[in-house]
Image (cartoon, rainbow, N blue to C red):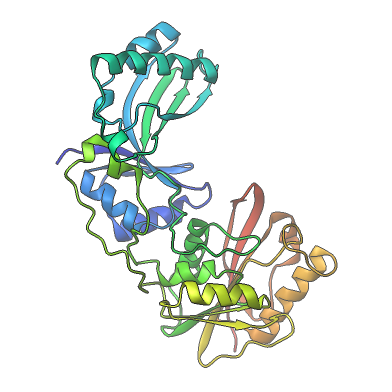
Length: 373
């Protein structure tokens, strides 16, 4: 089967975790990690498998062509001769265009030129009417021009991959599913105890918990853009649409003071072995049979209001979780400007510290491991 050049878009700062997940679930020999992504060579079967199994990428692109271009007539000629009907499933695609260090830097004019070339090409190579009969949505093509080198790519995913359609009920400040998947993946790596329970003391809609318990569950609860592409005709995505638990661990508990939200979440994901309890975890000790690992994305006082000043609130929460609850491991996601407040807890060692941007906010994800009982 033909190999294709594929690019997986990864949130900067999570590339190593995405690479490790890829090599665990969909291993390949030719893999290159770059800032913000992973480049691979793969066939159509791998494309299907990657969309169903990988939880950390944001989306997956198919590289279509690459060429040097320094003027608009050259751009037009290249685009009019491109074999659009091999990839195009809708006559009016969307365009994502970026330019750096290039003679062509007016994205509006680049889009206008490509649109004209595409219209002329489709006169000579008419598009199948399947898009009309089956109500296909427009595809998205990515055009990147860097140092006068143009790369044309097709988005294979459609909606971002963190939109699993596993949960529709969300809290006030939900964490994106691909970020949650990456962080629980790191938290659960090489655990010192085999039988542990994952606890989120401020769980909201439970994203950390659902991602942990379905991390190895292939999901096809939503359509992907590649399923409508002409080159994909005849392929069948054989995958159950049921939700089952095949994750990083077996048990999970979520606590939150929002009773109405927890009630809705319980009903929506009732097939997963997650126990939800209404509780203010700042005031109530968390005691469970056996060992627990804890992960928390506390409110920062922006979209979710908190009592008092942010630093004092977070310090109080951190101290309670570390000194009272004493999990075997503790994963803690915080604004980066809070870094100096949370270091060297007594009886714990730091095993990881990761920085990235969450919704435009610089954050740090810490992991501590208990060294004494």
